[in-house]
Image 1 (cartoon, rainbow, N blue to C red):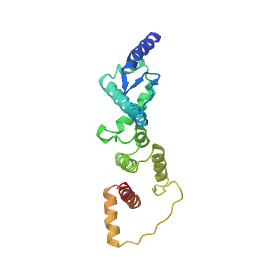
Image 2 (image 1 turned 135 degrees about the vertical axis):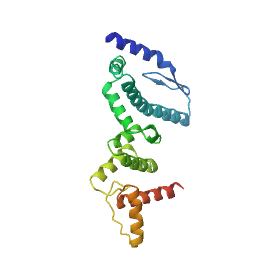
Image 3 (image 1 turned 30 degrees about the vertical axis):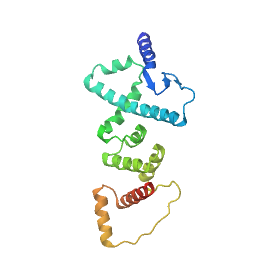
Image 4 (image 1 turned 180 degrees about the vertical axis):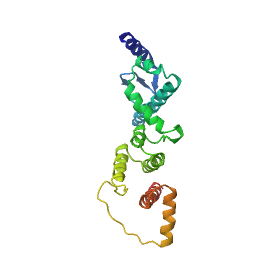
Length: 205
């Protein structure tokens, strides 16, 4: 096993110089940045690193799913010959299985998806929509989901809830209720979602 791990490390070291990031020298254990780069260049490098790191979790999850399907009797031994942690891979694969590639949101991190992985698909899509449209962080998404499970109304603020009284016609309420039912949400959550979407649209215009 020691010889196997030594071989894996050697392979990793050989690959170090093959990770080009603009003018930077990216190695397995270091990122050497050239002097004199602009703030925009520095920021762009950081974004590329983040995208690569976040994408790798999806890639590893899909990679393990493939291995378990194609090599059910041998994939576990093959993993042991790498530097990869099997339990971590299992976690990645579990999240990846919960989202077909077409349902994954490129604008959101793997961790956003992981927060919602245990929910039914329609609830996953609802919360992913909210997080994507309103630019929620992973932690804020977690707090909103937790609040919803505890029966609190969904609000864009973590502070006190300020009640708003609205008088509407009966026909309006029936119309909204039908729309909420079609969206598989209760009327209050649907109304809050529509108001948040409208606010986000106005503020981004």
